[in-house]
Image (cartoon, rainbow, N blue to C red):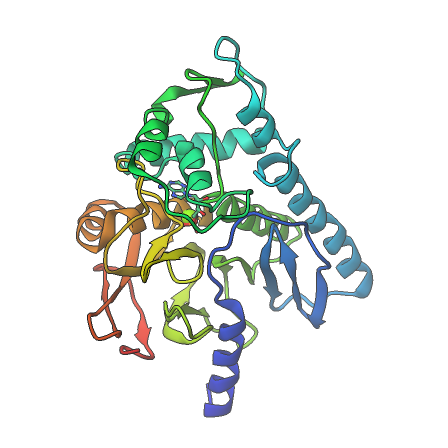
Length: 354
Ligand code: AMP
Ligand code: MG
């Protein structure tokens, strides 16, 4: 790639790298930006699809747009905590601990993957943290900016744990009426995989789908080379600065970080990612972790769990886990960053200080 092309590539990456935001709001217009890329917002976050080597006619674009819109709406109506009659909201408000409550195939897939991630990560990934997410002001109710008390946290913590959920082909059963779920840490990844499957079904083998920082790239970009995806500098202030560039093909990638959504009290920053073991937001020098896994859904779940674990524990976990690689960016005392990649994570560093 020549220098101009390189800069153009980087600018494109800047647009693509986005951090996780909550599942909130409704899907807005998906528009065709140029011949082969769509952009819009979905589930409260930015959404982009770039297709290469498959020229689209206007009619095809309209059909794709309609079908993808449907996928997004389905996901929202099933999994949003912000829509009061979504499947998840109905499940959360139900006190039933006797019966299995039937759920859609999509929610079944997501809960099943969540329970698997709960086991795999020794409970660091836990969709039942939902009441704690709400308590800390990261749920559907706007935050009051007040840090919860130890007592409030302890009371809620007693009703957290994915081992209090049973999932079978009949549906889902809660073993504690206070169990609530929030699948915000895995649903975006699931949707990315779903859109990727849609594109593959359409005979498209070269594309990149990105929703709020969770990504799948298949095949090659328009220049015929592997997709190059930016990892954002996890700075509280600077937006969309590229820290490093990753080549991604036929894999899913996700980033979790504390640099866009947090609660600030007395100069202290509390992340929106909660440690299910303590009830407190994950607290350490880790600013972001980027994970590559076989699909975006897994990468999404693992990124959240690794963020809770922190770099040391997280790196040990990744090195033992087959098919998963991670890149950790930590804050240093002087306001800079220091990063560490797992043995199979290849990244081209762009900026290693603040
Ligand atoms: P992500 O941006 O994918 O890391 O997801 C973060 C979101 O997942 C938060 O805003 C919460 O809604 C939820 N969440 C927070 N902590 C956890 C956790 N330990 N396990 C699963 N979901 C979590
Ligand atoms: Mg996640």
